[in-house]
View 1 (cartoon, rainbow, N blue to C red):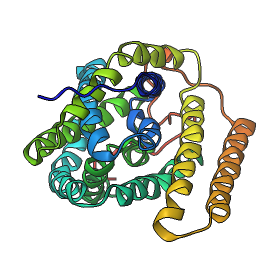
View 2 (view 1 turned 180 degrees about the vertical axis):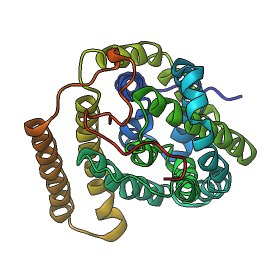
View 3 (view 1 turned 180 degrees about the horizontal axis):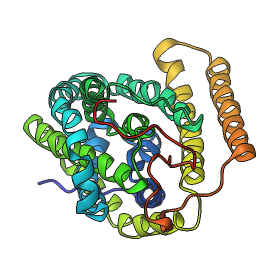
Length: 312
């Protein structure tokens, strides 16, 4: 096996990026890839990044599920199962697309698909699903496709579960179950396509150690700060990062002028900051992880949700 040495500046960049992303993941139960992948794509192509991130997230998601506790897993596994089953075809198709499509188009797909989802989270979008089980199948297909192409799935899964009457710990357990399934399935798919290379393994060795520090820090932060405030702040930064990445790739793919392209980035930043400011002005009383679980029907942001139901 040929050695692949990463430059020291690249090692430092990815170590810091992994630490920041794992802090977010520790606090929210998701967010590692959605925060780090857009910036990582400025350095490497998806075929190097994705296998390293998939391996790491398989471990992170297993750990997050273990922390959720048997009670919360038991309360959510039947509701998570339809999404997990629907992941399989999505992961297979997405892996084939990653292996066949030009890297620049994959970068564009990453930015274009996740920016609206991040902005919806930044806006605090919530709409309870009355047919949760029926909606789980298309959600699973879409999430499997998105994850295997981009390594990102937290925003759509969070949007799906965010207003379905789950307590904070049940919310994390439901997300962890789906993300374990998608990361393990994608690992298998990538293996058969030969996507695990020396370059990816070298990157994995750089990004994995900071996680052992970052996840506990994130878990500690949400015992002191409102979970919703932490989530909104993370999504605010994330939207700015993705907006910049999208603006950087548009001129090359579509011949758009740099001025017009970066005006899009400026617009994203203005909207993003405005959404966060609106939240800070009208935010509810803080709800922290220290409280254990929320009261029945209480949302992560301190409001109220409809009663939980498997089918609405």
